[in-house]
Picture 1 (cartoon, helix red, strand yellow):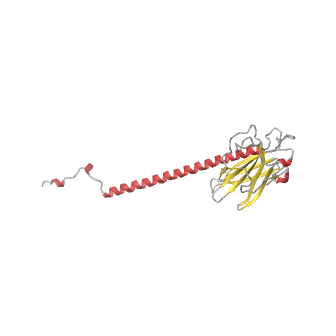
Picture 2 (cartoon, one colour):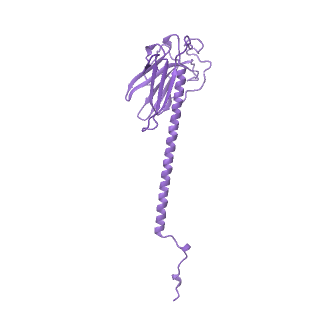
Amino acid sequence: MRPGKNDRTLPVEDRAFTLVEVLVTLTIASFVTVVAMSSLKTMSTTSTRIQTHSDRAAELRFAAARLRRDLKNVYRDKEARRQKFVATLEPSGSGDRLFLTFYCLSRTKARPAEPEGDVCEVEYFLQQTERRSALMRRHQPNPHPEGQGRGDRDGERGGILSVMAEGIGLFKARFHDGQEWQEHWAQDTQTLPELVEVTLGLAVDPEKPPLLETVLVTLKRATGQMDSGFGGGGGGNRGGASNNASSQNERGGAR
């Protein structure tokens, strides 16, 4: 018996996909897409974290370099009352907080349109809140040599406040008086420490130890070697513009 037309078998290449084959293909494609998207998200998150850590580490190195430069240019005067170097530990919620304040020589103008001398007051401290912890630098041009006009630490002390580095969780220092190390340096000491060691710690990962940067500067100079004073000598006069002052602003400005 001859087969009818409807009994003919279609060639393999002319057959359509079955529903089961379509479902299996879609399932495999969905699985591959999910895996690929998850991998891309992980790579993106890792790249962002690495870039953030790299930027923070660069800020840490910048802050250490700036602090080292300020300490190397600490101001000295024959009259002890005209120089200033104070390191105080003040209680806070997470323990004692260090405030390092001193006079230094600077050729960089903080306010390009204002008259400034070569002597300025700088202060380093940690500013800690629930959301961030940063190393701050306060720059006060034309400080009063008698220490007048001082306010509290919440902004009345004057000057320009700049963020030196974000994510700093450790800021500690010690000072060598020629015989032993001290944890603080009082205002009435009347002398400068011979050595200053400052340690900055960057909290990169909560589960890992912080990335540390140590600054070690000697402040001892040869006998009779002094800097220019507030009111004369080779440096700029207090309240007058320095001849060599630059118009460059401090990095970051107030944040």
